[in-house]
Length: 160
Image 1 (cartoon, one colour):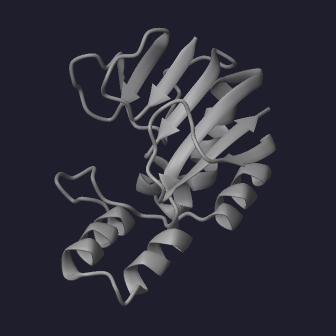
Image 2: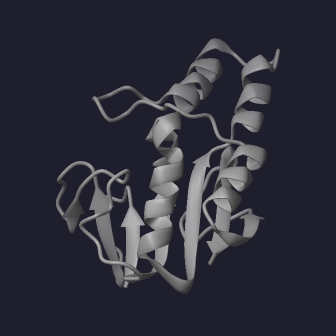
């Protein structure tokens, strides 16, 4: 099985976990508590723009939970805003007010509802350290994942 955490749109072969119930969502729940899933039940997991929504004190337990439900040799795809790039974009003297506002929303979340806030700013160094600290191996930064990504996203492919 494959799990798309944070997804909304059904894709063939993938189950969707989201904190909110939408049409096409298979499991409703918070990614910081994955106890509804048994160990080693997913071959692939895509964490789509969700880790930035996890508070700093819960990041390690969240990654351990993802590790627990991923099969040995399974793959974890991660996409999060890249704070290094966003900071450069924000201080760019050529950037206008609306561009800076868009960057600020990528940093802190759109804040359209109670779930749309960012609590953690990720960069390669932080994410790699947390992944290594929760027993993930073969950590690789990639330019594109299986879904369309914009340039300011930090994308990872991780294997156990």
